[in-house]
Image 1 (cartoon, rainbow, N blue to C red):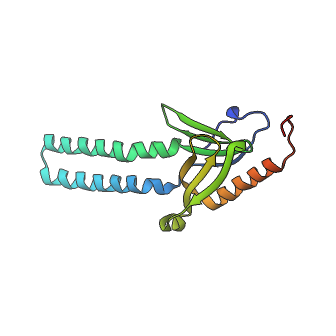
Image 2 (image 1 turned 135 degrees about the horizontal axis):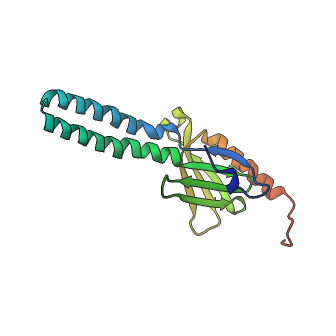
Amino acid sequence: MGISEKLLTEGESVVVDTRTHPKALILPGIVLVVSLVVAIFLDRKIGNGVASLIVWILALLVIVWWTVRPFLDWMTATYTITNRRLITRQGLVARQGHDIPLMRISDVAFDQGILDRMLGCGTLVISDASTHGSVRLHDIPQVESVQRTLLDILGNLHDAPRTDDGA
């Protein structure tokens, strides 16, 4: 899982590497089971070759759209925190990414509902100094631990002596 080492700059190291919590796969799993149950039921009820084929084609379309596609989205979406930046990547064929230098992050917070607390995940809210405002990373496993780790890295960055001529 995670980001390729060749995409890291010299001296950059991965601190946290994760993907969306598996709870994102609960609904697709339910859709898969219900689709199969309905298709089997209708196949047994109808018993006709052409109508049965249509039922299975429709079931396959539902499974591909509402089960396989979300699973592939889940598998290809990663969140990586290095000692220099926050990196998000998603997509199988068409890739989408977002990098935020840690020096631009001004606040890190998290949201956890009741279900999120039971499952051990939550939404990480990262505010940066850009005009975009904040980035919300949904369903991050062990979100409190990730928030503390990110705050520790940020604290070390701001406490480190500057090597440029800035004040």
